[in-house]
Amino acid sequence: MIEIFYNFPLWASVAAIFIAQGVKVPIRMIATREFNPKLAFSTGGMPSSHSAAVTSLATAVGLQQGFDTAIFGVATVFSIIVMFDSTGVRRQTGEQAVVLNLLINDFHRFVEEARGWNKKQQFEKRQELKELLGHQPIEVFFGGVTGIIWSIILYFIIY
Image 1 (cartoon, helix red, strand yellow):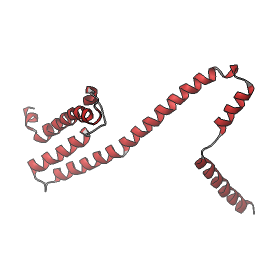
Image 2 (cartoon, rainbow, N blue to C red):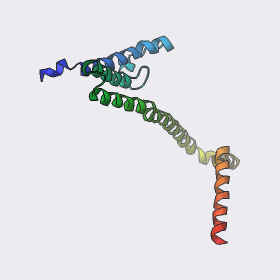
Image 3 (cartoon, rainbow, N blue to C red):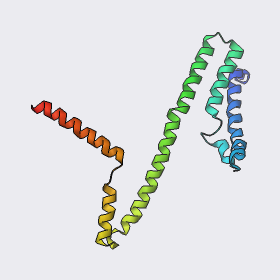
Image 4 (cartoon, rainbow, N blue to C red):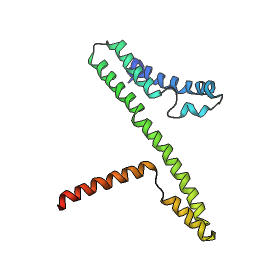
């Protein structure tokens, strides 16, 4: 069990996580003049502690075991996958969270406005309804394309 304390790749990776998390605070402070110590315990931000950990792991394995070993190859591929997911899947998840937050805010605003719906005059209700039924130009375009394609398909099925 004491051997774990001599595992260089393990401790190099753990240290890289702490260093990356720790420098997020001063980097944000330099960039935005905002002191936020909570960043040291949060996900995301600059630099990526995930990337720091896995590249540290691969480098430490390479240094200790050799850069021509199978375990270095495994650590390197693992690093590539983690970094790819950090820039792909995790980034997309963050962008979706932004959209969901906007939707939640819009929903709360809608609920507040709906409470006063009965108090509004009839012409106000009609105007708001038209706005709710409107479409974005891209929605109109693809609706048109769908209609054209559907008509062509039906034409060939029937005739």
